[in-house]
Length: 226
Image 1: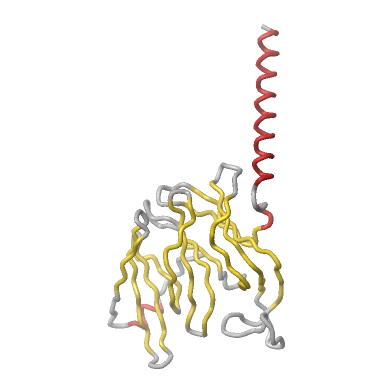
Image 2: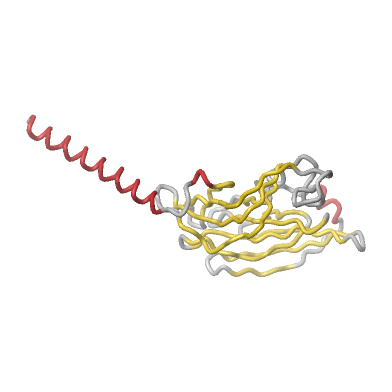
C-alpha cells in the first residue's frame, strides 16, 4: 500500500511540475505581460466564452489636462481640466480566460491619447444571450462628436465591426440592436442612427428612427457602456 502511495505522490508532483514549467514557458513566449496593459477588459463572445483584452502601449507619457498647457495635454473638448491622460503607441492583445497564451491583434493605435476620466476605451457589456460584448476605442473630434472603432470576439479572434460616430454613446435597444444620437450644432437638432448587428456574419444594417420628442429621448438616454 505504501509503495502505491509513493508512486501516486510522485506522479502528482511530476504532473504539477510539468504544469508549472509549461505555464512558465508559455508565459515567456507572450508578447506582453498583463501588467503592461494600461486598460484591461473581459469580453465574452456570442457563445459566452470569455477573453481578456489588453490595451498595452509603448513610449507612454502621462499628464493632467490643463488650460495652461499648449501641448497634447491641453484641456479642450476632448479633455476637461484635471482629467488624467496617457499618450503612446498602443496595441490590442487577447487572452482566452483560463489559458496562458496572449495573442497580439492587428489593431494598432499610434499616438493615441487615453482619457481615463472619460473612458475613451470602453465596452458595452452584453445584455442578452447570443449578443457579444463590444469594445470601443474612441477619439473626440469636437464638442459634439466622438468617433469609435468597435470590436468583438469572433471565433477566438478580435474582430473589427465598424466605426461609429455620435454625440451620445450607444444604447442597447434589444438583442444586437444599438442606437446612437448626434447633435447638429448648425440647426440645434438631434438626429438618431440605429444599427442591427449580426455577430455570426459580422454584418450590420442601419436604420434611422424618428422621434416626436427627441429632447425627451435624450433626457432619458441610458448609459450602457462602462
